[in-house]
Structures are given as C-alpha cells and as structure tokens.
Length: 100
Image (cartoon, rainbow, N blue to C red; front, side):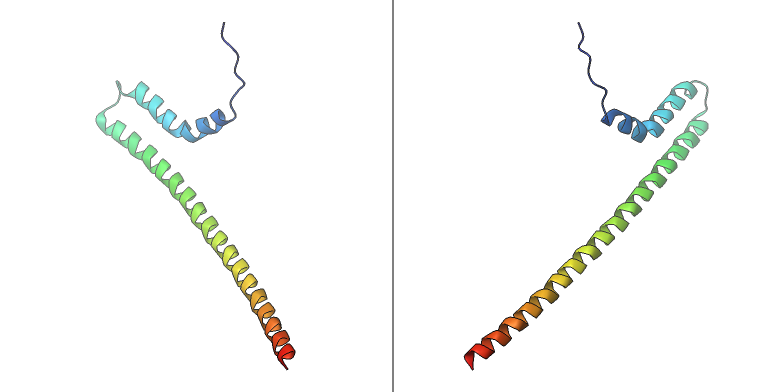
C-alpha cells in the first residue's frame, strides 16, 4: 500500500522556475529527429537568451533591493549617531554643571 503524501507547496514554484527548461527539453525531444543542427542551435540560442534575460531582470531587482536596504541601514545608523551625539552633549553639560 502506498501512503498518500500531501501536495507540495514547493513543487508548483519549482515547476514554474523550470518550465522554460522543460519546454526546451520537450521541443528538443520532438525536434531532434526532424530538425537540422542549425534549427536546434537556433532553438537553444533563443531559449538561452530568454533565460539570460530573466536572470538579468532578477539580478537587477536584487541590486535595487540591496541598494535600498543599504540606504535604509545607513539612515538608521545616521539617526542613531545623531541621537547619541545629542545625548553625549547633554551629559557633558550636566557634568560641567556638577563640577562648578
């Protein structure tokens, strides 16, 4: 008896990520016998360019997200430094008053 597994939530996402490659493999399987090397080369080149373009888009999104995160962190650090300098200034004034 085989146990029933719950459907995976990861599988559909993986399927979507690898769909272009799967289509390429299917096209290659059906066309290998019937296609010339030039046609197959063109098919591979087109698929490769599409995947490369998608990769570049993802890379650009990552770069923007990284830049935004860096700006946010820098702003938080600057704000914290400003507060600490104000607090330090206040403590110095208190110390000077106590020494008088």
